[in-house]
Length: 277
View (cartoon, rainbow, N blue to C red):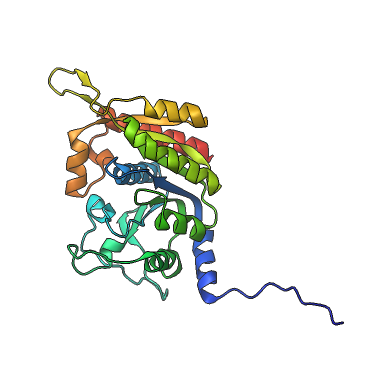
């Protein structure tokens, strides 16, 4: 009986390209939420911008195929991917010297056209984001996922092979935390370390009298953090300038560094950087 050859099959060209991109990225973080409307993309953009402002090279990957918002929030709507140097693949869009972004919104002709795709097509394009794009050397890749625990976040984690941490975004409502708790369990089942919960829209401070109002009242964030023994990275108050900055295509942290919400963002970013060390 002849011996059986147990050699591993050779990698395909696609696998080699993905591995080459992954080797250029030091830390990979995924931003997830249980439900929509909690400010997940706002958190992703400003965490990325804040880390880039500290001298890190940062990439933002938007895998929300049906409702991408990163292009609008970073002011890159209408910009197309370009080939640079001798590479046969395009690079992500350069937002600042230290910040790069990739989103399906820059690959469609009309931003009003809906993307009507089933799971396999979405999984395919997410793989292409890492396979057919020439990513630069990055200190951080921040992945902005759509709400829930479906195809997109699952595909990202499988494609990236090793995700260094998840950031879970929620409002303080108990109803929002019902879904956020599922994302905590999702991270655990996918062996992704949970860096912590970010409580968004935690309170509203009147700009005239300074009175605080808990618009999204509840103790769900504290209870979830206690139940699962995870950290609350910070609580971001409602600030009308957050909405304005997103609509005008600039990160909130760029022009509002002295505001309460901006200071809270900086605390969150410092905690993330410390955990990554």
